[in-house]
Length: 353
Image (tube, rainbow, N blue to C red; front, side, top):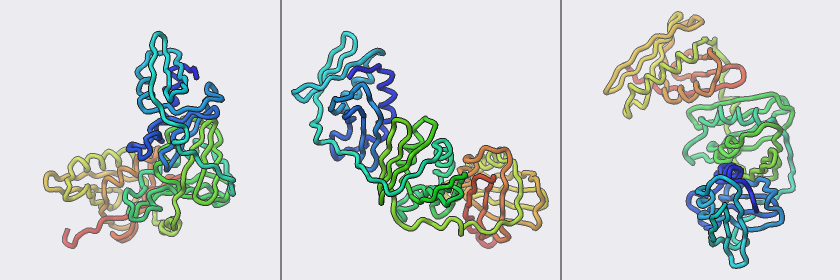
């Protein structure tokens, strides 16, 4: 195989995302070259991309060879498998020989006879994945919520994440009908691909193949009962339009003033056309008043985790965000810009506070 270093490094940067940090099978720290494709496999996800320069060749580029290629000067590089179980790497006047692994040691990516196939716009999907991923669960108490739901209902493609404290729901028009929950590592792999065009999704049971251009991602899907996200969003109260940038800046300053004991809690008090934000910690106090675009129909007092509010606000682009406050301090805050919703559960306000 002969290829320009710049092109090889570009492929490595994607393929390395499916190389395990601590490999139980040593050869999976390397890259499989077989049948005109290059592949990595961490036993949860696999990535496969076209490598026409290697058509008809079969070998593994081990971890040490990957590091060697990265250290070589720019220009064409030859990687040549030898009969003694080594690879010869040539670049200009440089020649090195590195031991590799037997081909049979590398786990094959699964193949499926798809029972379901869907095609979605890749940019639309990755945009929504990027916007909701912050709300995936970090712990394994409910493994299904460590992933992201893709729910095609025949009218829209809904992309949803929730962790028990917050829920993010993005959607775009789509006529297909399907449902799957993809693990967060797969979400990260999809977000690492910088391409446009149609994405083909083939599924059968708990396996899926995502294919765009010359790249394929193989993933095992999560199983279980995902939150019925439509039911957790209550009927809307009257919305309050707020300058998103000003609210985000204020919340960021509140996080500076917070400490571990208070965990970034922010109290929101709404009255007339003013939203007051207040934080009291052992090391600092903070108060800021923001003018809102609409009038509160009644006085409102509620408390949230400021870090969660910041995460949600960062996922929006528009200058103004519609905020829906419940009538009681126990009701959630809902942010909505028409294409995406976020729900944040409040923090209990102690009596007398």
